[in-house]
Image 1 (tube, rainbow, N blue to C red):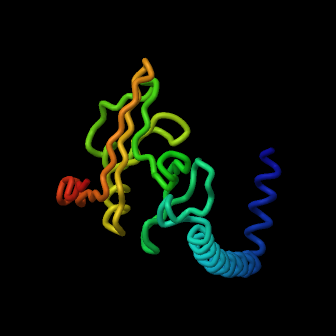
Image 2 (image 1 turned 45 degrees about the horizontal axis):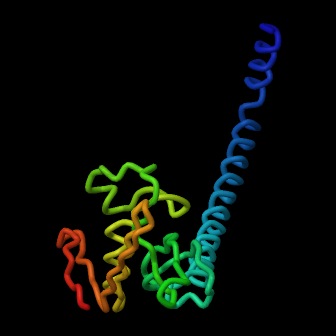
Amino acid sequence: MDFAIKEERKATDEKPAHQKNVSAWILSAMNQQSQTLRHNLSEVTGAISFNLRSVSFQSCKKNPSKRSGKYLIQPTENDEPFIGYCEQTSFGGGWLLFQYRFNGSLDFYRDWVKYRDGLGSVDGEFWLGLEHLHRITRARKHELLVELKDFEGNYKYARYSEFEIGSEGEKYQLKKLET
């Protein structure tokens, strides 16, 4: 082992100019690859953004599918899309669920950040998030449907013709609620 190390040092010492040339060539090749990767990443990122816009919907009402389920929602072209659950059968369909609780498996005693950003998963219990609600309701007029069911099967609902949530700066105040 010592012999190999000494031999390698000797060989390296004998060819410093060649080593510098190889190092310069490697650095040049790495720089070219880095530039190519940056360019390709930029193209891919743009394509992904374009593709998300082509498969997302401004709202559940604008979704032509009559099947309830998870969809990409993008209130405006400038908004980041997010996954929402669209209810397409109740009251004519087109409803975006923003809270769903059915068995108490998710702890809703959370801090401001969780209520702003959302918690849980649309595959189970969840809260969509105040920021998403703000972005959705500022983009265009939305109705609100509140459905309550208890464990005994009792059912009540309230329907409002328009509602709007303020921004974080406004502490997500309920700005409009009309019947």
